[in-house]
Length: 221
Image 1: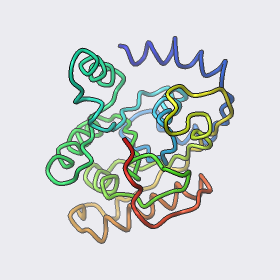
Image 2 (image 1 turned 180 degrees about the vertical axis):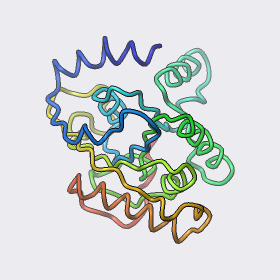
Image 3 (image 1 turned 45 degrees about the vertical axis):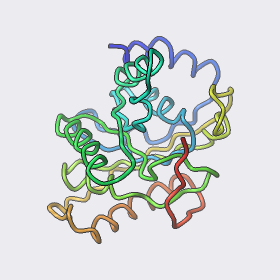
Image 4 (image 1 turned 120 degrees about the horizontal axis):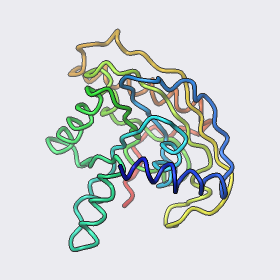
């Protein structure tokens, strides 16, 4: 599988050479069974660094633009992202977003680990923004535990607009799993979803130390 090959023989060796990673909380990742990794999002490279340090494969929700390109380049990009465990996520809301979440739901029902960015997009300035409700809906529908994750300083090695990360020091902090079984069956209650999403965001913030901004992050292409 392309994902395993790249992780073991390309990404990990390069990370060891060019990056110093302060990894904390690795034992909070379950050895088996479904789990949702809910992370802040500072850089495109977050979706590379985090899976690289974990033994279990991670499926990430990626913006659907990566899968809708035209021509030979567009088809290759879509093929590549699908083969590195990325699922297209439509961020426009409504039925299309619901369909994207259904794909994530299926992955969790198969006992896989799903990576998701509750903010919905990269932070434009390093601060933490309001969590969208998709992560809460997935947690309540599937019963999967939510593991908060903080990516530290990844925006410094790969700022917005930079294609290739520069060598540097980053951190990955993995928190203890959050259990929302008390809210089982309440996935259609918007107030419950907001409460769960806020609790997830607060857990991420405690790990990351970021300043919180109580609005949704502006979308970046």
